[in-house]
Amino acid sequence: MVRSGRSRIAALSVTGVLAGALLVGCGDDGDTADEAKKPAAGRDADTGDGATEAVRSAYDRTAEEETARIMLQTRTSAEGKSATVRGKGAVDLDDGDSVLTLTADGQQIEQRVVDQQLYQKPPAGQAPDDKPWVRIDLRKVAAQQRAGNQSMNDPAQSASLAKAIDDKDVVKKGTATVGGVTTTQYRVRVDVAELPDGAALSKQIGPTLPMDLWLDDQGRIRRQQVDMTIKAAPRPEGRSSQRSSEAPERVTVRTVLEFSDFGTEVEADAPPAGKVTDLTDEATKQQRSAR
Image 1: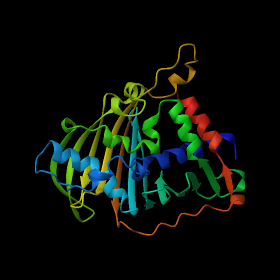
Image 2 (image 1 turned 90 degrees about the horizontal axis):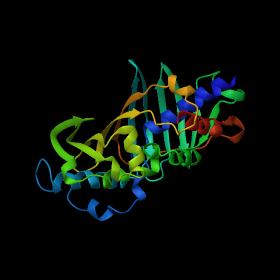
Image 3 (image 1 turned 180 degrees about the vertical axis):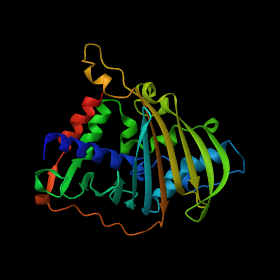
């Protein structure tokens, strides 16, 4: 397969896993463990400590279930065009291992995350080197993103969302049914300045990050929706701006996650090494060229 094919698969691989990365890995943070033991509803108010506490403790309460079935949808729009990635499968909320089937452009991709290694099986004939699977080391990609102040794309930063929320940032919107379960919806504005690399990040997505959470009567997340408008990062002085005319200046991304069947079994096994092509270098090069 030609090099452009490798790059396309690397791009889709990174997009697919980051679509589901906002919650995974947040269970080990520990700073809000005591809060998770408190009543989820708190006091019955539209704003204030009750709503804020419910949102802050939701990540721990969800992660305590250890595993869940997951459905995701990520819609990316730029310059009047849009693309949607849908996925369904199961996830380990503690270590981030997962098994998903992703659908994009009418094609299906089998995806596994095992020990922070992302494996994807593209449609027949689309994988490089006549091997059915490709692999990306997510730790290396995350390190590259941190170097570029792209911390919102790092799964390890997910718990920081809850810490960047204050009373003024949370509003109870009412109730709704999600997957047959009655939930309470909260509208949240995350203070981007309080996130890791917040000063640099706010230049790309603005001062606040809009997020909606639907929590069940046990305070667990049943649905999470995050809306981002990403501005092109300013290029360092002296760097070539040749690619600036190719990339859109503003991209909107809506990611919706739904969780169900807590405690479900997750069987995420790495494919045989001889059937895998490593695309980690392609993915990290893509991250660098995008800045």
